[in-house]
Image (cartoon, rainbow, N blue to C red; front, top):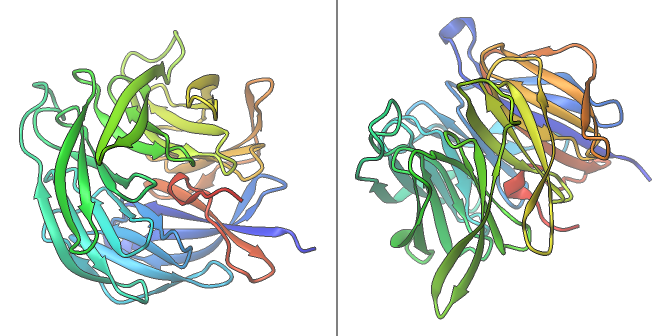
Length: 370
């Protein structure tokens, strides 16, 4: 039987004609933990990318809008339609609902959520709803006004969670899929000056993980719906740092392992990557390691499908650093030279399957049990 094959997609900020490629694709060597450059895509300032749940389309943020790309059998990308405006400033996050009928974007700069309808071929259609967050947070550099940093549906496809780093709230919206409209129903309140940044949800949908950029922690919530009302209860808060760490740190993205047994985050300033083992019964986290990544400002980090290798995406040093991982011993070891990538933002590892059959993605929001 042929082995599974994987590709990686890396999004980046661009620098005009001198560096126009906002998305890069790589062939992934899982056995040896390495990557080989495959394709470059000209797109401006791809601050975030996401793959549809049917594994057919990659969506990307770009200046003033979003773009869609069809995934081929070998993992290469072909643009599907042009840039679709979001009627606001450049977003920082996007994701689809679990039926791939709508696309949600979150705006850091303007505190805006935009909902767009998706066409039958996966291309992006018209805007169906727009919401600007209001209010103030702590009086600080980035927390004095709304900054929407993540928009993600609960796995039952009923509620959109919108992390707002500026107000220390994660807003909960009931999603009316018949019209593509959002209705506010609840607020998950983080500790003051926590800075909720990214959200992941357990594969069974019972637990919500919110990484707190300024608090340098992951808060774990239970989730259930009772009589048509969503209920969230914080059950754990775990630091993403060691007791010894850099004085100024910002915790970054959040990713689930392919088997959903681990969750990975990273710390800028401390320039470290942290791994937690997930208790699949009660959702709680146990820290396995927090170790340096040999780069500056790790904006994203993800385990390979074998959980034996890891890649860190380092924005300021403009590198991807690769490591061997031993979870039992709680150690990582440098695995060859760094890969140069201009101003990278995030990474997805995607399975293109046995032979040419397209399969499932590895990034947290695309995981399903297999």
